[in-house]
Length: 102
Image (cartoon, rainbow, N blue to C red):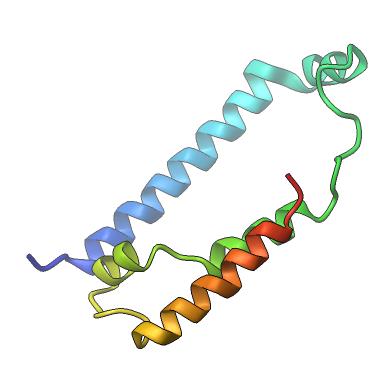
């Protein structure tokens, strides 16, 4: 079965736009900043991030450890390299993930 890459990309982009818009509207009008600050003052949320570089390391881990099977199906390719190269990349990305904070 051949996937239509244009449709997959378009659906992914449309889904991302809808999700971002929905998250913004809920955060702005349902949760509101006043409720968020009240939850921080009550101790339910942290006032400062526990680990400030978490987002950066999460993105790096996400980029360097894709699911090879699904990536090859979505991109219409046979994979990202030879088996030994894939295994070494998986080992490297596994080490990266183990070094991230819990």
